[in-house]
Image 1: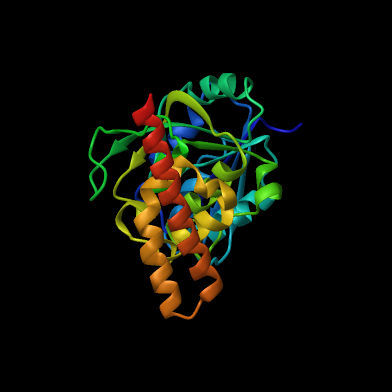
Image 2: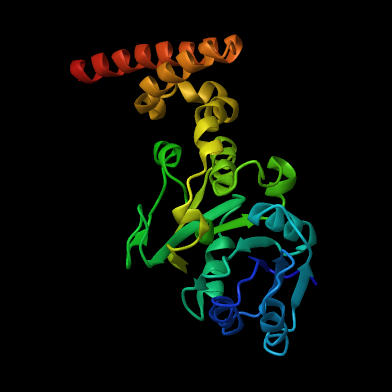
Amino acid sequence: MTPFFSIIIPTFNSEKTLDQTLESVSSQSMRDFELVISDGASTDKTIKIIESFIKKIPQITISSKPDSGVYDAINKAIEIASGKWIFILGSDDQLATDDILKTTAEYLKKTTEPFAYGNVLVRGNSSLLHEGQLYDGEFTVEKILQKNICQQAIFYRRDIFSRLGNFNTRYRTCADWDFALRAAANFNLYYMPITISIFSATGLSSNNKDLVFNKDRLFLIIRYFRLKSLRKDFIFLRWEYYDFAKELFKKRQFFMGISAYLIYVIIGINSKISSKKRQKT
């Protein structure tokens, strides 16, 4: 029987935090889930800790072999997972309450969208997040162009990966943002006003800049949103596109440079038209 949820936890030498993470899963009142652990060949006590939870969570699948990073581990787990909805939990994060899977399932049954998300409660501090912060409410297209939805707040309908592809392992910490942009360009993102998990702000994604993603971001927006990137939601990106076009021309990437410059020009025209309409009303 197909489980409602596949919970994926990527691990690598996670012995210091994993026990609390697994405890939050084992205490769930809703049991219609499988747990897929994708381990990067840990050399500490990670596997022993996982095995100690088998009696509490008999529906555990463990795969332990070398990988090229956290998103490679997640992609491997997606291939194994069989649930209707896939949820990715960090090995230093926890589900927010004992009933959160049950509550989330009630929301998910109300939507046909393949990408659903809620909030996370932040634990710890980083350059962008602080202890006790609730991150981050409902996202508009404009908002998701500027900041990411927390991975630990997202539920993916299984078939979204066959439609959009898996996580791009080129991006070390922002592959989930890249995927969220793909999703936002193709679907309506379904917001659930609930707190899904307790997110550790001291983890990899909170404290490491993804320079490759930052470099590619505007290119990705053009690629994913195409003509949609000329809408008013994108006006705030106008000067970023101008600088991006200049950079592309310097690198002799003329086709993309012209595309970026045209977007800069058209967004400017749309901005003036919108401004005139507001003045008339």
